[in-house]
Image (cartoon, rainbow, N blue to C red; front, side):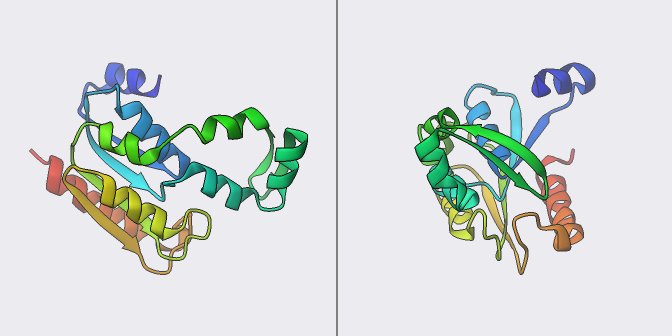
Length: 165
């Protein structure tokens, strides 16, 4: 739906940007959407199961035994069903990244990310077979909030380098 909206509203080449699990969604979507001309994968997990287990922490065992949990944090409250977990483990991000069109891509990751470890981002970068750039944001966490201006400048430079007419 997002891509359909962008196509109809702007009629411009599409550079997809996905942060965290949104990066996984972008990669999965890119298998079928052949008009995406570039990707920005920002703090993207390589192993969804490992990342979600780490992120759930103490809630993981409860989800496995009860089949449903309610998680509250600084972002609000959400309910997760066991079926969410069961679906996640079906995705092989290595295979997905190998199947998407090989267009320019930038992989951005915070060096102090404790939700999606930098090794996962680096694994995604290594497996991707197209033209690519790795950008580790020194000292940044999963949200890269403290380094956002520097990161935005690097991303803009990458866009200009690859997509300026």
